[in-house]
Image 1 (cartoon, rainbow, N blue to C red):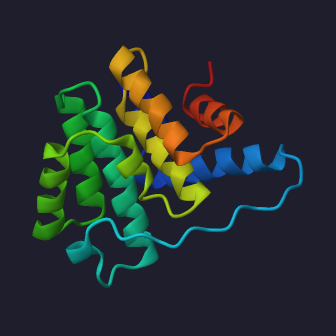
Image 2 (cartoon, helix red, strand yellow; image 1 turned 90 degrees about the horizontal axis):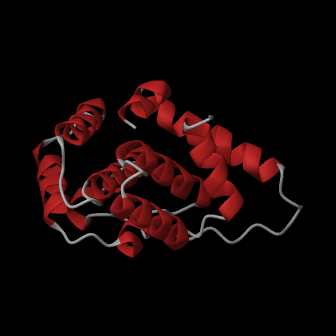
Length: 169
């Protein structure tokens, strides 16, 4: 699984990969009324004040990465490295780094993680980030990924398309 993160490339490519999978999936769907967008949520009140949309999105993806990394009960060096790389990419300041440490200590709750997704597109990106962090051959991590997808309300076909986008074979 560690190679999957390398296949996607960088955290910046994550959004593009999720968007591509989402738009492909969406193009395959019957025309239907789009669900109303839920209001954007702030993940951490002290950190969320004054954040731009892109920063809120990055924080939501980081939250998903942290939760997926700890879904098997421990955080290995590869997972810690991927989280650290994302913190560097977004030029995380001390309060955001403290938020990350707080997230690592919190009990795992897929519903709480999913609540950070303000749009279905962001939910797809969060799920894709989670796929990159987790080893879906681990029972605990596979169970977490399935529950996260359910909490994000990802259609089974979208979930499959996202998984196919990083594991084409």
